[in-house]
Length: 110
Image (tube, rainbow, N blue to C red):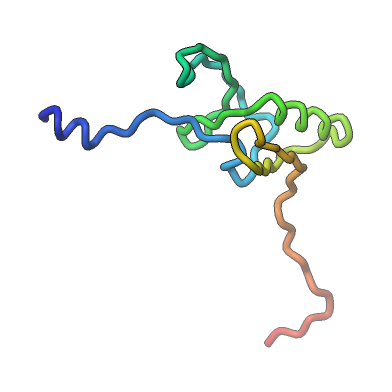
């Protein structure tokens, strides 16, 4: 393979955000890594892995999960919604329960 082909096939490593997931189990393993910002400064971040992809977990989201678990200790999963970007980013963390199939009593089959 030549340099041109390699360059055209190159996909830079990228960490997604936990808000990109539909929901997340609260017992998923969390990791920590170090990266370099565009300014050349190193920083540490926390992430989870889902389907082989890294998803960054901001500290404010961890605080939201902690608040939920204080009120609902048996919560199994959460949803994270992200609004805004950069310094204006806000996160909303909510408990997640899988949809329940509604059963209708006395329903006549077709």
